Amino acid sequence: EVQLVESGGGLVKPGGSLRLSCAASGFTFSSYSMNWVRQAPGKGLEWVSSISSSSSYIYYADSVKGRFTISRDNAKNSLYLQMNSLRAEDTAVYYCARKLIYFDYWGQGTLVTVSS
Amino acid sequence: EIVLTQSPGTLSLSPGERATLSCRASQSVSSSYLAWYQQKPGQAPRLLIYGASSRATGIPDRFSGSGSGTDFTLTISRLEPEDFAVYYCQQYGSSVTFGPGTKVDIK
Image (cartoon, rainbow over all chains, first blue to last red; front, side, top):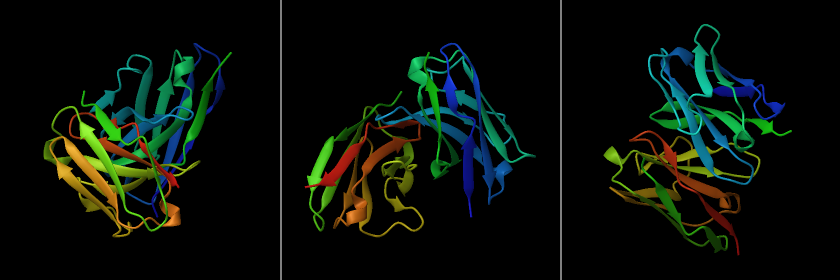
C-alpha cells in the first residue's frame, strides 16, 4: 500500500525557517517524481515544487522561488522541503504527492503556521 | 502560466441528481493533461480523472470526464451522499496549475 506521511510542520515566526519531511513507503520511491502542494486555510490548492526521480530536474512556483528548496534522499525514501524567510502568506497545509504525470497519491498533510 | 477557471463556484444539488462541473483553461492544455480531484473537509485530495477522461483506480463509473483543448467537464451521473465535496481541476501539461474549485453541496 502506498503511504506518504508528512512531518515537520508547526508554528514559526515571520522570517523563520522550517524543514518539512515526507516519508514514503509501499512503492519504489526512487522511480517517481515527487511534489509539494499547499493549501491555505479555506483556500484552494497551490503547487509549490517538483523534483524528478534522480533530482536532476527541480522546479518551483514563483511564490516560493529563492526561499524554498526541495530535495530527496532515495536511500531513505524521503522527500524534503526546506522553507526559509517564511511569510504569513506561507501559512498552509503542505502535502507531498507522488507524480505519475498526474498526482496519484497524496499524504495527509502537515500544517505550517507563520505568525508572530 | 495556464490559468484554470472553474464554474460554477458552488453547485447545490440533491442526492440522485446529475452534476456537471466545468473547467476552462486560458490556453490549450496539451495532450489532454487535465486531471480532476475530489477533496472532502480535513482530507487530502483524491485523484478521480486523469488524461481528461480516464478514471483512476477504484473510482466509480458514475464519475466521467470529457473535453479537450481549453474546455473540460466532470460529470457525476447520480450523486451519492459521499460525493458532496469540493472538486478541483488541474493541468499538468505546462508546469502545474489548479483551478479554484467547485463545491458540490446538498440542496
